[in-house]
Image 1 (tube, rainbow, N blue to C red):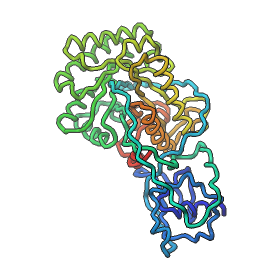
Image 2 (image 1 turned 90 degrees about the horizontal axis):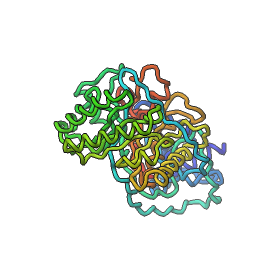
Image 3 (image 1 turned 180 degrees about the vertical axis):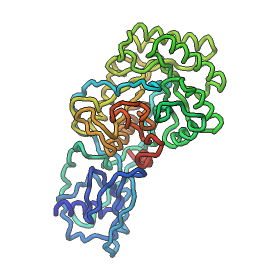
Image 4 (image 1 turned 135 degrees about the vertical axis):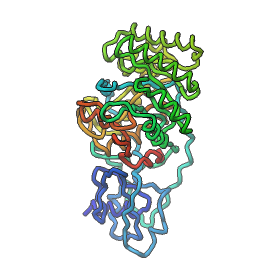
Length: 442
């Protein structure tokens, strides 16, 4: 009964957004994940305050600025369940010691997994709007208890005092391959990028194969799609493949102009795959020299590597430092909040000890909605929680980033479920959850 009264009290304050693994309201409704949206909001017509057990109310989840006081004081007693957006997460829980972990494995089936973003100065946090004061409730409640710590099944909830507004994602990684690994046509690429443009204005490509850079440039130019490209040159398959990608990069950029191309990553996690540092540095210098000779020296050149393998020597030859950082491969898990703070701390370590004053950007980070990578609970609800919490934490810390990834990667034939389900869209480019959740206040 206490749980029901607590839910009743929370629901009584219109605008509270309920978000947990399976929250139960006083009327028995539950939060469910669907293909088109995730979210439940309870809007009361009235409440019998004498029945509320105020000692059980968790005041930290109340979004006072969204309370509909006319509904609270109305005379009707009916509740209406409506589709809504779960709120962002509360202030992070105490952090466990960060554990260095390897990023998601790279698969090379019909089409290799690639990555490369462009240089971008660190994103400055947006100015914080003045938080609205909390109104005094009708009845004098008992002192508010401390919020319950987040468990492995919990999802983002509304923080006590939103400090600033955040928009959609800064960037997304984009691999265009069809589900069978074949190359998409220009029409498919254009349709996909129009959907991606509703979420971000920056995409990261990993290669130039399948004419993906040329197709993306054509789709963006002819369709007037508001997306910048952070390109990639694939070097994991040796010098011949690197040269082929570099030739195609130069040709495509010269055809469509360099204005849409904001940078190029030379490889992705190649030190992690066994490449020597000197070989990687040689490729970076070779790409830069070619671009300068072609009159494209204004395009930033850099490597992308796991944070554990990014060295000062590599940073010295890069125009920016781009790191792939994941927490779902760590050997411990306490909360999604702690997982987010762990990756921010690791980026801070790179900024303070490796980057040498150059901008640091996340080349990849994300949370899979299926499978298993260890103790971190992989689910759609926790994917939503992670992306909401991470985007807010990255904005506060001043980091640009590419969230991994645009669509589920069924083209990675034979890969683990966890590797195939990082997308915010499914493999058919249907959104896996209400993407409006990405626009909530932090």
